[in-house]
Length: 274
Ligand SMILES: Nc1ncnc2c1ncn2[C@@H]1O[C@H](COP(=O)(O)OP(=O)(O)O)[C@@H](O)[C@H]1O
Ligand SMILES: [Mg+2]
Image 1 (cartoon, rainbow, N blue to C red):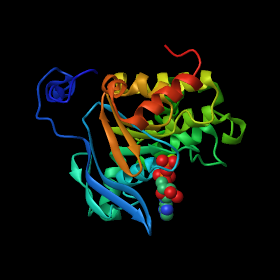
Image 2: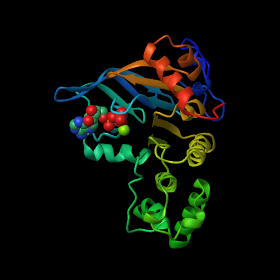
Image 3: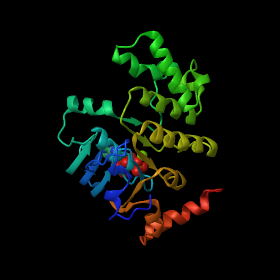
């Protein structure tokens, strides 16, 4: 985690799960990405890389362009200039049909969970499984059971989303994302508006998915504590630019004034941090 950028290319991500070295191609990459909405310049020449199996945290204040960054990865938005690589492919000019293929590999967990309100928890998670059309009811039941267990909401299987807390809805949304067997999950503010215990549980869950399923992840957050727990690498956005890219340890040594302010503010507002 504390590799300097010179050493990054020899870091753990240069090896696959069997310990074999492989050429380091980023799974996701922003190459000089710029995006504006009219006069509102949201991203200006932003570059970062996420290697297979890594977790990148995108930090920054509300409105700085964190969700816009994720939407560019999902192909919901296109950059004005620069290139976007996802699942090792340059998707910048991909059309919707091509993006559908990418979205089977990379799924996004939205802030509100985006669950189907009229479907039970179990049916929400089963949804991507039913779309596959190659599983029978018993197989679907077992897979859903396992996924709900994994994210800690197994007893809620027959409830509706409206019966659940915000944090539980997010857990169900994560289970539904997993049922599509993705290689990568993008989490948009997973711990916002949940109580500290639930925030800890969600952070633990994201970490577990990284280590057990070797998922590549991007976690958008302004929760520094979460970033410290999860991030192999951090991108700090400020005034449309990536003013810092590096490890947590490097971030703590950053001389950038706004990065320092962010770390100091976090020290004030988050009790009980380690
Ligand atoms: N589809 C859109 N059309 C116009 N402006 C947008 C759109 N999406 C986001 N924005 C603007 O881009 C800026 C960054 O938004 P966002 O990425 O959602 O911020 P955050 O970092 O809080 O996730 C905001 O000023 C927002 O109003
Ligand atoms: Mg956002």
